[in-house]
Image (cartoon, rainbow, N blue to C red; front, side, top):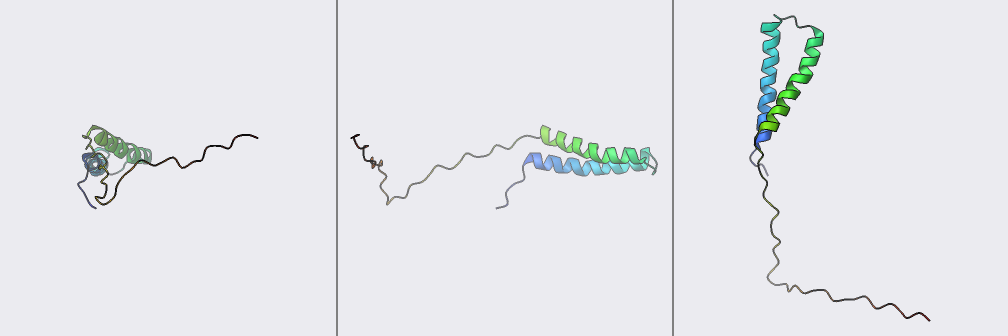
Length: 92
């Protein structure tokens, strides 16, 4: 059942991984190890969400194939159904 992974999913996955590295670099090189709690909490929410949304939005969509055509068995004759309802009775 496993098939190829769509481009949108791959792009979002890579963006999430890169956002983790970006957050690590931000804490290590910009704030020199002591990142304020407010910056950490907002950054961990906003940066991965924005990057994964942007990557998924910009990635090409993989078109899905249409539904398969129904195949009738060769040993079955297909006929139109007959009317089986009786006409309503005449009022008395």
